[in-house]
Image (cartoon, rainbow, N blue to C red; front, side):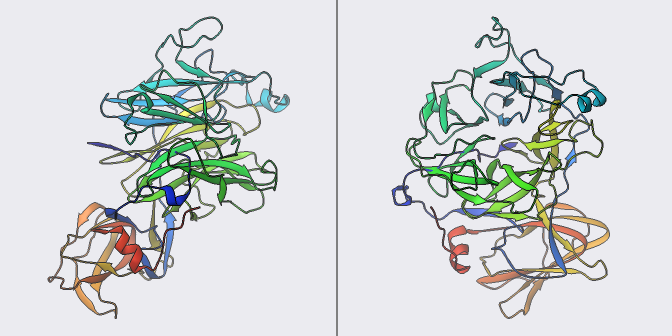
Length: 480
């Protein structure tokens, strides 16, 4: 069974008081990267997960006449179970100076300059997510012919998603792109005229993304601003807007910046996973003129924290000229399968503002392995203790990587630290591995104590109301 992360992009809007009332959210999976979950730690550090770049990379490249330069590509991927297809929308420059056929020596000898540039939104499909087809759609003319996979011309940085929330089938697919514009489609191929998203005021020149936020009862847009007073100069930063009706939006406000010399936030595709928001943060290393992807998280899409700052989730290859040596831009959004998470991305073999070719690529993670706790000093175990959580006899499971000779020891303690029960040690890598206890747990609220040796812990499962968890932690959601 395939579960598509319905966390695509959407822009904010109307005042918070206008949002539909939402009841308590129930979730079963709890990522340890959620700092609200963790009470205290000893000899433990939170580190991003280790992705595997697919051996078939790159999956495809700039192999059509209208694919002059993928540049950042701005890919959006869904797995449409109804159609049995992976669907991809991407945005090459259909007119630009191309690096095809150039050697590295030729690239270094000839300075890159933008020529005539024009965006074109293309469409591709796949049955398995690995072998992709670029169908001749006959929709949009290029050089006088319609035998191509173009669905639109002139939309820069589009984020596309299939919106199950909207009851109107003519608006099932949504595209949000530069100049704060929204388009609708019944099938992802035939797109409406541009409609302005009034109030965002971003003119975001990057991958623009939108999602329906079920916990907030509204759409959220993730865009990019500049940190200067004019919003057009200064450091690149991630910004957010919201809307209830897709017409009136709040003015985009900064929610995350890198704040490090020579590093800026280039883009951040955002999605929901396990009851929180995750962001695939493109980090632009301005002096090197290269980009990698890091991980960020938020409880509400407003307050963001980087995870393991400076450490890539998807990094660049080591040698100039390799398919993703120059830039790595994550697609919107990951596809979540039962046995793995697929993160598609654009890789390029040259610098960001230089001659380069772009390629569509894939990296994978095991379920929940976005980030986890491991030991700091290897000669003593790491300890992670959760905050107090409600308990009513529910089954408890964990997801962890366990190395040879390693273990995860789990116990239940009360608020005074007294052990109530201990689980049989976990000595092998598990995904949703069931914990087996030495005695029945009799308590209305518990804390879990994890002791890690040669292991990395990502998540645990325990069903309870998210609203009750927030109340116990003394936190209130705040909206702009």
